[in-house]
Length: 426
Image (cartoon, rainbow, N blue to C red):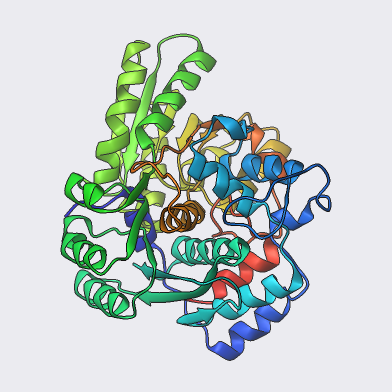
């Protein structure tokens, strides 16, 4: 079975469950809040409405949304048409009514939006902060689109339950199924069954085997290789001479590491760098703590360390000893790392990191792709998504100390919304 890295990251996190009563109390805090897009000026310089939107889109709001999602400015017109429309819809100003509907959807297995005519199914794979945020981002996009009348959710945290729930979802005849499956080739039969039933199937974020990628209607995977190739180039340029690096991942042989590590290694080898240490963390706090402490104690002092999850465990030993840490690199970090990095800066520690966006909002692309395909618009089978690796100095200005420590960076939700999302369970 092939599993993407994000799957492993999501699977290792602690499950969180609250009663509906407790969730409602937290959600009440956000009754008047809105997504990032709603902080924009009221439709100044509006563009035409996107196919999935019911209102004009503020060009400044679109640019702000792009910067928030990708961690850097990218010209809208350079993106795949599906990604362009996803950005426009994500930038639609969230009204109090839409906010209320999102809150309601967080606690239901079937959510009626009150608009549109399409039904979207989302078979989820796990309960954890990343997955909870992904579900909420997908739902917010469905609400903002104005085209989705109903969202059906299921949860299958093992192969058997996932497939059983997927079949049950097919029986409910949604128009579109958006999935970010971690179960690889095992999902091929149910994908084929869904397509035979006339359902448009979209796979986003996690890379899947070729057979599954070819079977779905739209495939929008993360470009892990591109991100780490970009990161290797930036690190080599920053150091300016050959150096050594450490390489870490969760478990041996995982599909994510197979996608990104060879690209990083090639990029650094081309710059005459050498690998001095490597290790595995199991993607657990204990494993990451051990790996960070072991690296520090080894005395090898690599110029850079690359890891495919949040980096605070690698930074901590150096900060405790008041020593300059290696340049750190990752494609997924949480707000806890931003907090730690800010504190390091305030203490005068010279720390550097390169990070990519957490991809937790890719469900928005999946929703848009599904709507466009179902409406007969031209959608390429494989959607290319920019995935830059950026200097953390570009991210720190957006740091919000009120954000939950385990919220992925970035999300379009503000601190109160993120807290409600993480409290809402599956």
